[in-house]
Image (cartoon, rainbow, N blue to C red):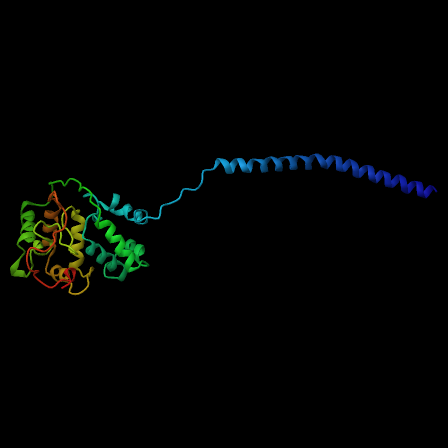
Length: 263
């Protein structure tokens, strides 16, 4: 009997200890439970307060937005930059250049990265978009650090060429107004001097190519550094005419076969 009473007392004591322990623990659990319930109750409020994610429109304007980072707003570059204007250039010219970057005939790491996985149809859509933009050209400053002699040489190359060296006038292909010729000959006006000089230099150094017959490669190899500086300096200070659209046809027969005109 004594043994049984001791067991009962021991059991009761253990029970009291467990009860006291539980009493100590339960407030902690209660706090955690209340905190969890409190946080859970805030979730619907947070969800209700958050605006729905913005839906990006799937338009050609949105898809070519990356071009603006370099070429300027809606493809209208400024005279201060290196990058050329895209807005209003002939569709065929823009399309051919995109193909050339993708297919390795022109070299610019950023451009190659942008277009290397794009299809012909997508490149054509991009070209159509920029060709259809009608945006004003920025004012062109007539100031130049080129000498008067160099500017006169540039003008002569633009309108007369250099027959003794087999260099045709720019106007023979790019139009008498130098605003380009549809479908694929670009304007030479409204472009930064640095860009013009660098592209002519690429033709001279065999760093830029077009599909054969590559007329500009033939012309470019006949230019020297003085020619390039002269014609780029003169072109860069010429005002853009009120109607900057490319001509429908060149002023006369092309001086040589050229893939830009399908010949």
